[in-house]
Image 1 (cartoon, rainbow, N blue to C red):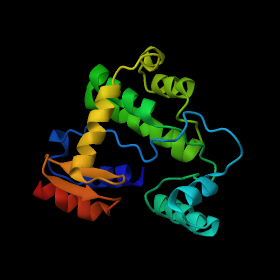
Image 2: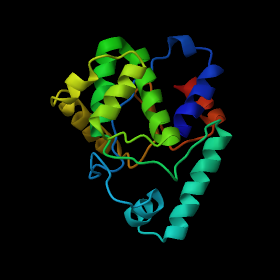
Image 3: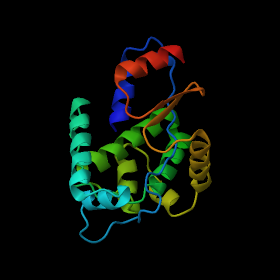
Length: 196
C-alpha cells in the first residue's frame, strides 16, 4: 500500500502522467495461506512464524510498517489485519482489467489494499471480495469467484515474477524495462519515471 501511495506521489509531478497506464500484476506473499483465517493466532505470531523471528522482532516489523505508512498518509492497522489467501483477489484484479480497463483495476486494487491494511477485512473470503468489488462498481464478482476464471492469468503473472527474480512487493516495472523493488521514496520513483 505504501509503494502504491509513493508511486501516486511520483506520478503527481510527472509530466507524462496523463499518458501513463498502470497495470497491476499478481504476486502472492503467502500462497499457502488459507482462504479464511481461523483460530486466535495474531498477526504478529503469523509473521514471527513466517519469517522465523521472535514475536518481539515481528512486532518491530509491524511497528516500522505502520510508521512508514503514516509517512505516506496511511492509517495502517496491521495489528488487527486478518489476511487470508490473496489468489482470488488477484483473479478479480484481472477480471476488473477486462471489465473496465486500468481505471477499474486500479479502483479495485485500492479498495482491496484499504480493506486489508486499514479495515482488517478478511480478504481471502469470497463474500468479502465480492462486496469490495461491488463497492467500486464492479458487479458480478461472486460469479467470477465461483469459477476458476483468471487462475491461469494469476499463475502466468507469478511465473513472470519468478523469471524477473521478484521475491516481494512492491515491485514495479516501468516501460517493460526498468525495475523498482520495494517501497522506494517518491523522489526516486519520479526519477525512474523520467528515465523510463
